[in-house]
Image 1: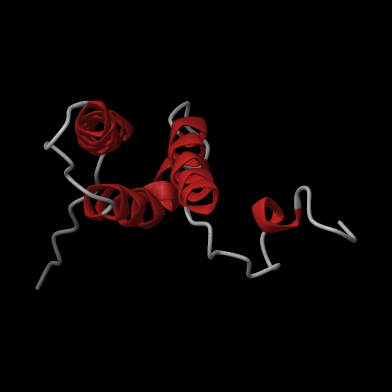
Image 2: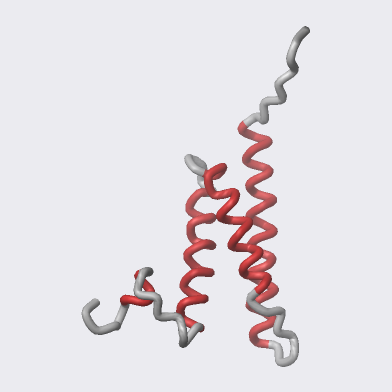
Length: 103
């Protein structure tokens, strides 16, 4: 009996990560455009979906040129969430310590 192992080539992996990146960027674009068009607020749910996608796939991007893009998108969503939430004062993340007493 022989086992067949499907090994994904680097090219296939790169193309898959590129597709994931496009989906994430499109979700960010929809939220950005919706923020400036009255009555078209898509909400933070799309950004959270993009964040989860990027967090799940970030490990696959390690060692590729796409790793910096995944990190950038993750940090963007986190910073946007911290800067828009006036009640967010956990003190555990750097965005909450910036400008706070004792920082």
